[in-house]
Amino acid sequence: MDGKSSGATKPLYKQIAEQIEQRISSGEFGPGSYLPSERTLAKELSVNRSTVVAAYDELQAAGIIERIQGSGTIVSQDIWGLARTRVPNWRHLTESGSFRPNLPLIRKIRRETQENDLIDLASGELSTDLVPNQALKQLMTLDDFPAHLGYEHPQGNWALRETLSLHMKTWRSIEAPATSIMITSGAQQALHLVVQCLLKPGDAVAIEKPSYCYSLPLFHSAGLRTFSLPVDRDGIYPKHLAQLHRQHRIKMVFLNPNYQNPTGTLLSLERRQELLAFSYENGIPIIEDDPYSLTSFSREHVPTLKSLDQHGTVLYISSLTKIVASGLRIGWIVGPATVMERLADAKQQFDFGHSIFPQWLANRFLGSPQFASHIDLLRTELSLRHDQLVSSLQDKFGDQVEIIGSEGGIHLWCKFNGEWSGERLLTESVKRGVVFVPGHLFGAEQGYVRFTFGRATLDQIPEAVSRLADAFIASGWAK
Image (cartoon, rainbow, N blue to C red; front, side, top):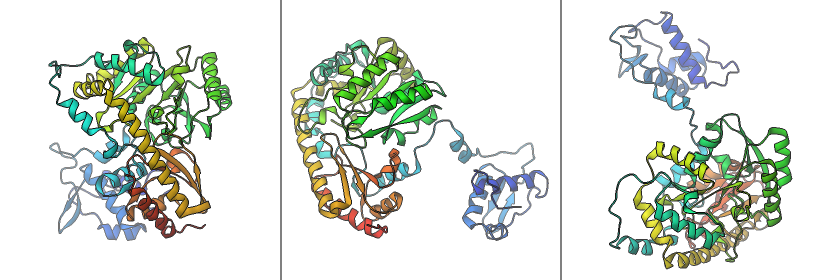
């Protein structure tokens, strides 16, 4: 048996498991015979014992071997018998599906924030004090809940769609009848529906770089080819998109043009108009993901791409996740009726329509006077958090940090000078009780970090930056 990898990309423990299974199949190890101990086999193959343990785990999960406490590891007694039963190889099944898992580091960040009491500069949600809990509680006590508890319309509750139609006209300058709106379980489901229903494997799509889309596996799960549009302080450059289209025949463009995640940048009006002209001339749809346009610190109106769209080339996605409460799970898509019908049919196959409870509550809140006062307070509080984070970073790092300015949203994009590892810095930061997202997860070069200031409270931010400074030193930061 050879424990050395011969250039194969398959993990070493899997190679060892397959070699053992071949030796069992050839009769070298018969039913009931003992296999070498983990320690012995590791020494024989010159590998770590943990590698052999993982190989034996794989074989045990497949029902090929049995571990007998105090005796050792044997080949299954009934491996060739008619009565043989085998446990499904769950490890293999979880790795072989077409729906890709999140990146390991993303899963680690989520696990750390869920299981430990950390100052959270990573999660894209609002802190408890920024959620309008009191207003929502008051609305829930009103005795006018509709009695119907059957399946909702696949496009969503009609009353909510009518309220959203008025909301978008008033707050976002978007003219959209209720028939052109579909309710989704947040913006993520909206993106999944678009990808699954309007594209096919092999299609080329353009995404921003850096972009949170780089941390999403949905494009690769769908077999799409993704191409990057560099983001500067004014957003993407439409001429880059034209060049990509000539080379790869871009089928669709995914953009987050308003206080972009992670950079916080705002696509300039000139580039918006140039982008829309290109979209119309080439028949390429733009997917505008807009969770942040109502969070302008200056309270100035941010013109969405959809509000400037005169030819119907933009599919507009938004949600209440970043401005009201992530737990409501209310998002929506705006587009042509034929597209809404297609997406609604797919959503009906997934969940038979969105739950009436969050739709009812969202409808009441959006249509109430409390919504305007909540948005005003949210802008003020997010601006204070943003300024506190900038001030704390400048105080601790001085000219060693470059801060990309943001005038809205919940993210601050920074570049730290010197040599350092994002993963090691994250590890050291977690040890000190603070978590963030390294920039390379968004497709950025080494040196960038995204800090999210919506989740941490105002008084937590200076302490978080102080701990971060200690983590930089501990991680071997070379200034």
